[in-house]
Length: 422
Image (cartoon, rainbow, N blue to C red):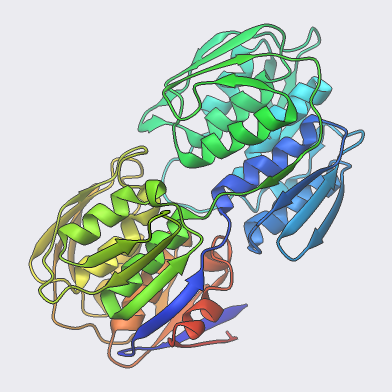
């Protein structure tokens, strides 16, 4: 197990490439199971979550080859059971449910693990499969599904307590592409990662309309084919480095981005007084800290609103921004565990329910801190970059779930960070 030492009060300068999206890669890798042909997926980030997904694909019977960021998956015949020892490590492993049901007509999936940031139930995934005609039994921590007559298209609403579910929409799309008849997904998630999965499926031969809107219509087909696909850039990684550049940058350029995916993050940085400049094609962005930054209010919302996955990182930015800011997380109201750790570093943050009131302070100071989840750990890295002294960040495995070589990228920008054994 590693920990990260961050020597603060330095500055970031230069350019880096943004990796492929973790949250797009996981369902796309699962979707390779929908055909017995080989598929090639490019720009798959080297993070522990994608590594677990590849292990799950192998356990299901697929042949998997990985070379740098390129993954080749040849499923052939697949097994209906996803093993507990792998599934328990990652919440997103639930997204193999749809492809297995579509291909085999039965599945046994252990209840998944992952970050503990509040209630992230699988009930909507189960509801989706039941809507397509599957019978579902819960037994000993396993979800056992069967559809002896095959999956049948239906109209299904995927709205959850806190809005549409991205992985639930993904799962339903993947199951429906091989179902008989037409499936209509109401209250569908419209995130770019859902659109990327839809593009992948359409290239395979699926008939999908409306991806990126709240209503997706799918006409089932008899079979799909293997294809090659390049994953979209990771907008959460890009937003994280944009916040870092605003906090301690001297001109940071991020390459391989998509401007349209970063409107929420860009808008808040501009509102805080920082400079954000995209190139003409929207594939590169340069960020400079503003001379007179000011606080702002943030409320998370489903896309195209401000992402819950960027809330913690922007809370770190606001912790050293003059003025009072209010951060509200409407998606995961319990997602403020990073605040108590940042308070150890001198941040002035008061959390009440799903809201944090942040009084910007002049400076933070180093302290030993502990990562509690993926995005919280990124927020602690940002706070440490701005703090006086050397901050020790433990439980680094959280950040390795979703950021590809974050320490190497910070070093490339001139950050003073060290990964050392815990």
